[in-house]
Length: 428
View 1: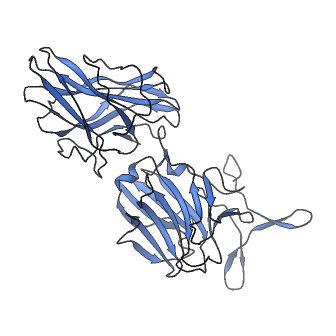
View 2: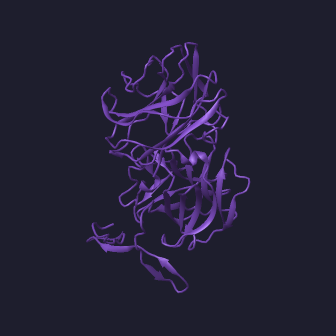
View 3: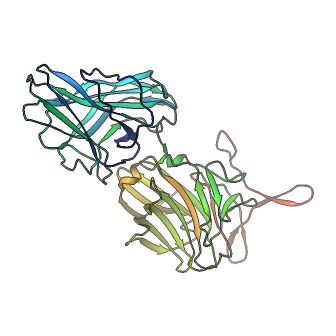
C-alpha cells in the first residue's frame, strides 16, 4: 500500500546537521515536518540566483516522523509541490534529493532518490508541478528512522541577471495538489512512496482485542466502562459522562484496511441513549465516521459527520442477529459501513468517496455510550475487535436459542469459561 506524506509548514521534528544533496547553493534554512497529514498555513520559500552558469539551489528540507517499525522502502516515489519562476527565461526545473536518517542522527541509512531533476520548466505563475513513479533505491528502514526530502531547483539559464525560484508548502485543503493546478495556497503538496505500508503507520486492522483477560493495552476506559469477567467482554454503560473505550494510539490508517467489532448487547433504559463506534480524524473537531444505535428509535445510523453532524445519514431498523457485527472498510478510494450476522458475510449499508482526513495515518477509534437523562439499565457489550468470533453455545428456552457460557467446576463453584478454538498455532 502506498504511503503518502505532506509538505507541511509545521516545525520539523528534527533537522540533520548536513545537507546531503548536491547543491550549488545549500544555504536555505527552511525546514518543516514531512507530515502524515496536511498542516499549517501556506508559506513560500524563495531564493534568487545570479550566475551565468547553470547551478542548483536548495529551497527547503522536510523531515518525517520516526518510523514505527522496521521494513523496506523501495519501488517508486511520486510528489507534487506548488512553484513558479520569476521570468520565462529563468529555465528553472525541479530538483529533489531524498534519503533516510539513522534515527535522530546525521548518519544516512540509505539514499532513496539522488539529485533527481525534472525536465519541465517552471511557469511564471504559481502552479502545481508533479512527478510520478520515479524509481527509488531500496532502503532497509529501522524503527526511529526518518525520511528527509530536500527540495529546490536547477537553474539552466546562462544569464547573469537575477532569477528567482519560489516554492509553496503548507496548506490543509481538502484536495491534494496536482500538476498545473493553480490552488497552490490551499491544496497541499505531498510525497508518496509506492511501498512503506506499516513503517510510518499501522492499518486499523491491527487493533486486535478479544478482551480475554481484561481491557488490553490497545484501549483505556472511563466513565463507568468495565470488563465483564463472566463473558470476557468490554461493558460500556450509557450516561451523560460519555463513558467509553478509547484507543491508546492515534497512529492508525484506514486506507485499504478494515476495522470490525462484535456488538453482543446494546443498552436498554435511559433516555436519548446511543451506543456508537467512532473513527476520529487527527483532531477531535467533530469530524468522524460513526455507526450509531439509538435506543429511542431502535435504529442504526451510518454517519459521516462534520461539525458533529451528518445531514443525510443512512438509517435502518436494528436487528440484533443480522447486525451483530459492525465493520468499517476502505478500498480504492471508497469508504464502506457494513454489518454481518457472523463476521463472515458482510452487507454494505452505506458508502461514500473516502474523505481526505480518512487518508491520514493518525486515526483513533472510540466506543462510546451516552444518555441524556439517567443511566441505562444495561450496558452495551463489545467483543472481538478485529478478531474472529469465539464459539459460545446456545440453549433452547422453549421459544428461542439463548447464548449461555460454558461453566467449569472449580471444586467449590461453577465458573463461566469461554469456549476456545485452535487456530493452527494457538488456542484463542
